[in-house]
Image 1 (tube, rainbow, N blue to C red):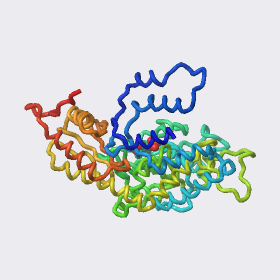
Image 2 (image 1 turned 45 degrees about the vertical axis):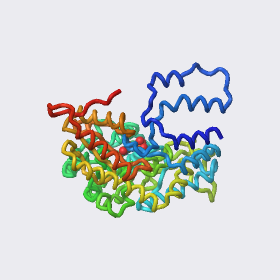
Image 3 (image 1 turned 60 degrees about the vertical axis):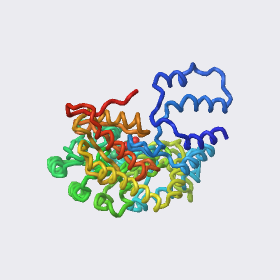
Image 4 (image 1 turned 135 degrees about the horizontal axis):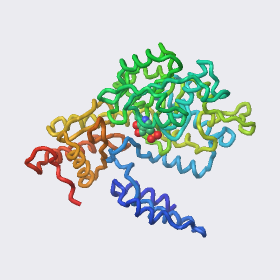
Length: 463
Ligand SMILES: Cc1ncc(COP(=O)(O)O)c(C=O)c1O
């Protein structure tokens, strides 16, 4: 009850958007000597709240624009609590039939919502990083099998060289997933990207033509900065011509599939072989939630299967979730995903994605009137990348002052060698009102003149 009361209050209360405690402060409260004696549960929860709250970031606040992250929908949180109360292990069907069948349901819904091939297999994983890992593991086994190499029998060491093509500006987690799978720099062919961070298709064409042997191409649907999409029509044709596996990193951008007005961005995206997408970003499913979608179920199972007699399914059983995941014992992720999708419905998913795209477009429109602000991306989705006064320092100052003075949480990043402010409209309650305030505040600060010397005119925040 104490946790419930606190939870309700926490979600309603106005609090700082960024953590107020330093790492040192948090260590002082968390890093106690190893407890020799246990403590009453209610007291522990009280201690946990006091220790954690100063170090929490307001991911659930509509003015949170700093990273591309969702804000844990409350229906999903309720289902997540039940998941822990039920204490299920969703490794195999028999350890939790309900969890397994919830995952079957969610898989079908995901394929239907995203309009991807309905007989694809879906693994409920921790996020897009692991979804990429699973999809690329399936890719690795399949392109090697087509080259006559059985990875399960022969492993990777004697395998033919696999050429892996991905944009030089691809999300860092793709490179990480490839490393987990035994690949390194010598296997990557980094394709130069355009000013939106997307692969230059003609360069990919040349790079693929110059190489023989098994090939995997990793494309982006929703670039981490620009929100842009690779050209899937061209990529699909190229991959078919080379018998290459096409994997799509669509951590948030894949959800553009639900909007008919964005069909030009996602055209032919369904021709790919595997897709990774998050649940905990645009869908606001509580962390962690991601989906690894693979067109070829056999390749998916080949990559992830864990076999032991005691794990076998009996006739009539539902799926063993572990056949599609890199884990055996695991959280019953299907319950929260099921609850969020059930509560949003297709209409709710469409409304959320559309609203955030409108927010980004509106911000772009409003800032077009501010001469000191330059928008650095093509605003097709929910992302706006901007820079002030063509100056790294001024852009940092803008971010600092937005955070310090206007109950906003933004962050800068470096893109193409420049400091930029990347605004991501993705938190569940962010709407046009929130965006109007943000636009007003940027306009106000970017119009401020504190120096007659031209550049870097935004003064630092008063601390
Ligand atoms: C394009 C893209 N791919 C992959 C990821 C990694 O996703 P996750 O943090 O859910 O593992 C992100 C995260 O922002 C992303 O934007």
